[in-house]
Length: 154
Image (cartoon, rainbow, N blue to C red; front, side):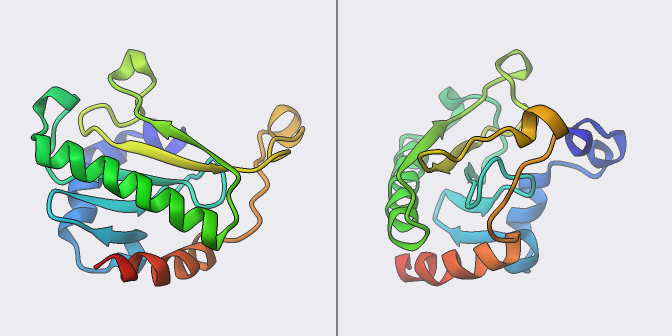
């Protein structure tokens, strides 16, 4: 939340537009680039493997996306869940979007969809007592595992 709320990050422009236009996918944690949308890991994940499926088009709501884009987003979310089941043995998922500031969106002006892998017992006391989330793997270690599988989608 500190990152999302900081003024300096807002002055740099839309993080999703910036990442979609740069070429360093590993540094930007971009796992896959489709025709109308792309998959990237969340820099501040809720759980290991927390990704976002994001349209290239900078819009705030689903009504502004084409049918092709909406279809690709759903297909990429579905394929991502399959990859998570096979590579990191996810047992369930949270999937959805926070639309608008009042809907909980940290970045409200560019819609994006979260796919969060879940496991039985993945919640614990750490966030409650110390505002700390335990992650099994680091971001780049998880990225490297997942990237191999996402590259097979091409």
